[in-house]
Image 1 (spheres, one colour):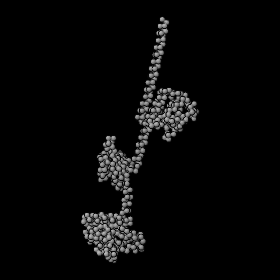
Image 2 (cartoon, rainbow, N blue to C red; image 1 turned 30 degrees about the horizontal axis):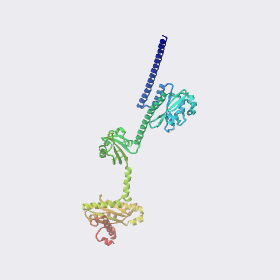
Image 3 (tube, rainbow, N blue to C red; image 1 turned 90 degrees about the horizontal axis):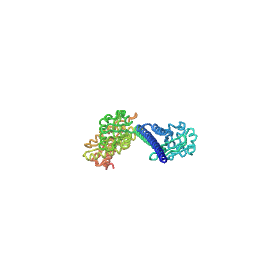
Length: 507
């Protein structure tokens, strides 16, 4: 009986012990579930803040407070690497003393710079169980004592690529060694912080990129715009808005016919369709009248298609640079290369080109043309007596009188000194050329009133006719020159048409 009683008593004790262990496990499991639920709640709250674009400071504080609420004995902080990469700055530390936060804000990153400075430098977790005995905390022991801190564990917040964003730290009031669960906690929290920081930095980088792109569009010295497939503006940068003298809302949705004359708008639309319908990237010169200034401007425009992911074209992007001044300079340089600087008549090079084209046309059409050489009589005495200034004025007036005697289709040129040449395309006979020559001679015989001086000169004019007096440029020029020589030899101030035999006489 005694044995049976002892056996029963032992069974009861064992059963009670087993029930206690089950109860403890149930409590522990419940605590773990509760802790896991709180951690999941914190994570979801942080992700919700990120989704709604909450400020980074609010997100980081939510992470820290979530850990502290889950573990009331912990004081937590998140510190961020500064732009220079050499210091840590407080990101969130709501429960640490303000004096402590102020003291370590901007702490240098390096070995021995506390737990956080060292973790940020090495990229490895740093566990300091007792801040008063660990060498990393030697410079900060007094500060830790004043702040009531006993231990500090720091985990680097790193991206997948290894970039350290900052550190997550857990403090205790007394010396404390972390458990395996607490190690997992610090790792998980640092990972959550990395998600927040990575997202924040990516968003900021995107904002910075958009701002930079916007600044470039708004300040670049080119007209930049986009149009839809119907040619309606979708965007116009600052320079184009200023040219149109309209805000964005009065430009978007309208096409070029609102801002340009119909002819210009038609031309632009034709070019746009090459891009929008054919997918071409084109570079063209566009000329348009600025309706605000009344000035005709020239633009070098690049237009390219904007495509969707499937390759279809949904818009056009245009970049137009004002090259009016450059074109003016080019035209001026071209003019300088082809025209006489004093009289603004064509020079020898341009005249030779026109003579070449005129002979080709006359040959093709079986027509006649005339070439005249004019040499001024008594010009040298005028130049010597009155000076080059008056001589230049005289040459300019001579050029004007010669042009007044010609048709629009005729060309007068100065080929040097007081020598001029005339091209008369499409004449019927040598007599027609002789009449023009006489008209010029009589005009140049009239007195010139220049700077208070009355001056008189004459002219000796030689005429050669294509094809009778030369079937190519060289022969025609030679014949006109010989005829002019005979005009001078025969008393000057007369017109001579080339005749066979003149060459022999001149020699």
